[in-house]
Image 1 (cartoon, helix red, strand yellow):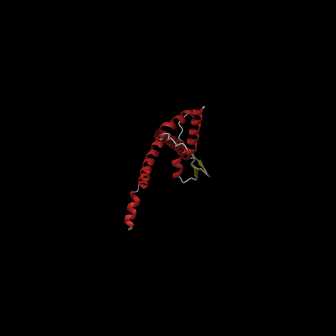
Image 2 (cartoon, one colour; image 1 turned 180 degrees about the vertical axis):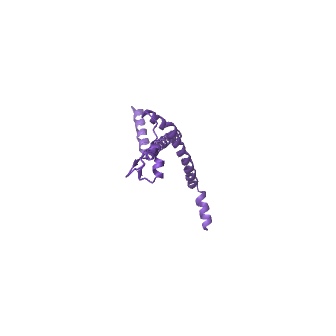
Image 3 (cartoon, one colour; image 1 turned 90 degrees about the vertical axis):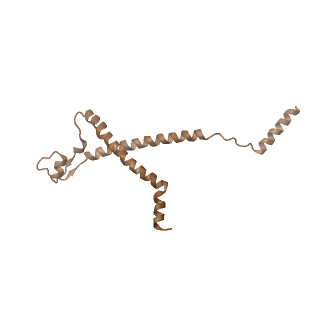
Length: 146
């Protein structure tokens, strides 16, 4: 088998195509979650904390800050040594939400699969063993005699 044929067989297999579709959908889904966090959740967090909260601009300057810079972009441009933890908080919120949505989706899909399996599985009548049949016949004969 040539290398081209092997590659074609590998690329066309169902699992590879399913994985590719999953990665593409996952990327788009990640953008949706980013939007949910930035546009829907963070305004509520800001409102609860009592003002405009932009986590992406939260940072600590490690070392000297001679110009007393308070903006993350300006601090990066100035070449200051910064610990930018705000962006991490936003990404962590995104991850937690994405993990929660995926968990709920998998749980829902498992529930649907279980219901489908339960519907399709009919109780199968197991044949009665021969010794039980023989004992029943003996019982019935004894009932007839009395």
